[in-house]
Length: 216
Image (cartoon, rainbow, N blue to C red; front, side, top):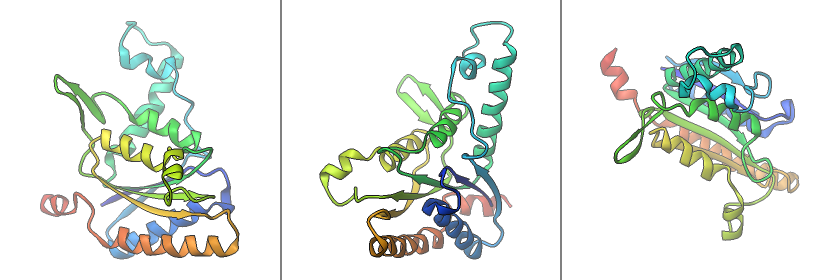
């Protein structure tokens, strides 16, 4: 089994999401010892924001792509190939200004490729990356899940559910630590709740585990 570990926080050693993704990966490997891990730090290896050059080769408007288009296409292909090769993806997703970090959004924009992670049909879009398990370490300084107003303000977990679902992934598990900016007691409670989520998220099978065992 292959696991892709993705961090996106810009806070380095002070990041709660990085702390949680590390714990998720460690617990997953304990429960599934045959798992190999590949690591992607989007705060360090950040793809350029999506642009006309990144889209150029995909739309096939011109016969000969430019050097910039080739370079951006290489980035997109590297990232989508890495993503598609993984059985389990662990994503660190802190809440920045009510949504995901721009580094994480830039990565997702490279993954969203017609013919690779989704396709359009006469009945609408169909995801092509199903059968994977995604575990999201969702961290928030405030409280958003406990009120309708808070839920309306967050475009982090809601966005990730939609985009991974669009790719055909139905097994998306959330490990949530919220209120981490509301004092020491609130942060400790948030981490305790998150660790309970980790125990549940890592104990079960991966979405494709039974099929992978049969193939082996």
